Amino acid sequence: MGFKEKVKQLLEEGLEQYPSLFLIDLKIDDSNKIIVTLDGDTGVQLQDCIDISRMVENNLDREEQDFALEVASAGVSSPLKMVRQYKKNIGRTLKIRTEAATIEALLVDASDENITVEWSSREPKKIGKGKETVLHNEKIAYSDIKEAVVTITF
Image (cartoon, rainbow, N blue to C red; front, top):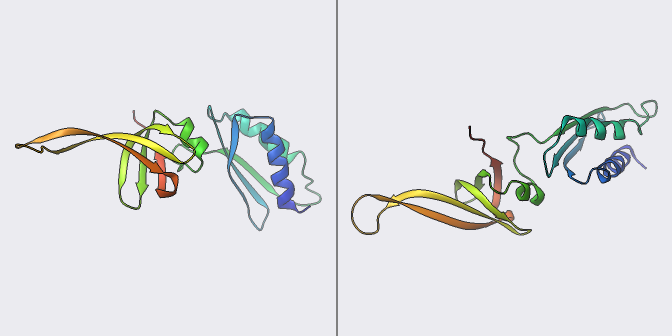
């Protein structure tokens, strides 16, 4: 078993012990720098990163292969990549970029195929002068989303 395969296997075994955590990204470069990015259904605590790091590091032999290991949570400004991330962010505002447009909308539902978002905009009245607030509700397929990021409001 190669070094990369062994790291993947150790990571999978470690994550089995923490079912609320899931892997977002695993990068191993040519100099054996391992970068693990995690997310969780209820967030990721520092202790979660430490525990996963230890599970991987304690089962690799530095005498056999030198490496550097970094385990971190997906940052607030990181784009959403997995369906599981969309599902955990229902009720939050997302900035979504598609081929056609960029919108900022409330995520109201997430299925395995698409998301449903709502947003309001000021548009000219159909009759008369002035503008009115129009509520939009749209389903967007994951395949149509170029990037989606949770927006933080204070």
